[in-house]
Amino acid sequence: MSRAVALVHRISGIALALFLPLHFWALGRGLELQSFLPWTEQPLVKLAEWGIVVLLAAHLGAGLRVLAIEFLDWHEWQKGLAAVAAALAFAAGLAFALAL
Amino acid sequence: MSVLDVKVWRGGAEGAFQAFEVPRHASQTVLDVVIHIQRALDPTLAYRYACRVGMCGSCAMTVNGAPRWTCRTHVDKVASRGKLEISPLRNLPIVRDLVTDMREFFDKWSRAKGQFSGTRTRGDDFAQVPPAGEKRKAADAGIECIGCGVCYAACDVVTWNRDYLGPAALNRAWTLVSDERDVATLERLRAVSGDAGCHACHTHMSCTQRCPKQLSPTAAIAGLKRAVASAAIEGDL
Amino acid sequence: MSYRPQTTLWLAQRVSAAVLGLCVPVHLATIVYAVRGGLSAEEIFARTRGNHAWLAFYAIFVLAAAVHAPIGLRTIALEWLGWRGRSRDAVLTFFSLFIVWMGLRAAIAVFG
Picture 1 (spheres, rainbow over the protein chains, first blue to last red):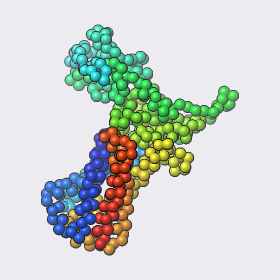
Picture 2: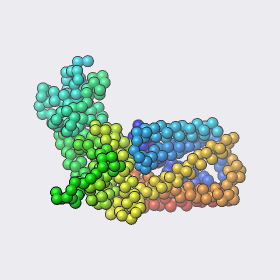
Picture 3: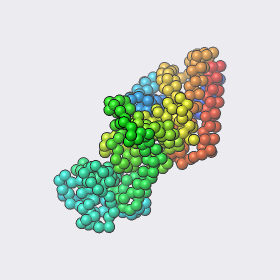
């Protein structure tokens, strides 16, 4: 289970690192932002946005697990941390989908 | 099910699986299966074992994809549908068939400064170490390692980066960092924090999951990370 | 001597992770709030234009990400691509500076 969470952490990290330049480029278009935004209404783009939100939440959850293992005293509840990571990702994805 | 279909790795890095049919018995272990193959079916099979009662760690092999002590693995537990696939431990060079070359495993133990350094002589009194002290409890949690190599074989980071010191060497280093009698702590912390040292652990925890003695190298490595960071922040490193 | 750079990188990664651990929930909550009823530039700008607090928040967020992402990619480059040495570190340093530049530029663009 820990191995799976660690791999999710790694894959989501790669995806987010690749997404960042694109994100900053879009925002940096400042004044032209309003003309750019209708493009983001397309279903495929919304799906990709939802995917990014889930990946961000998953990366955060998995990262909190790493910090807990490395900095807090060892206990059996590390398995619970994997569940926390999954729950966070699920919650964020759900909230985003409901808000759309 | 009175017969097992067993595939066994033959050869070195290049090789192939050879198939055998082995009679199945109650309470049979995977080691029983390997011994039967070599004694009754193919005497050229190379493999290692010694105590056969779960104390020495010599019989460690990959069984249906997972590293295990074959003498402590009941066939009933792993051979669903009567099939077994047996190959040598991962991440180690293969000598022949099921036998691996463990030299790099023990060399890394040494590179991680996994040896005790003390200053007391036989003329000094015994060191007084409270067993319930935090440091001693930390050392005791990892001290039972017998160097079987299962954790090393389970570790993805060793597969991805062959320089990685690995869970066993780092676990041993932590037991010594936690040993208040040892005087080489700083040297040891430097040894474990180079390229491919404790920082390369990504908490996959395959080592902890598979250790036949229920040790947790992940916890030991986390301890090393904290100790190294403290030493660095205090300017000692 | 490589114990010092490895230790520094590890510490930088964990410290930036802690900072991001605070920034990301705020960012996620903002996204979920902002996306209700559709995204519009006016709504975004209404929040961010001339707002020094948001500018400071995004600047810190960008800097933390610019530390965190390249260090993570460094490990992956070694373990999955077998990439070592100066060329890898040079490319990642460039990527980090690129993120700082693009990120601060974006933060300033929405600040106005």
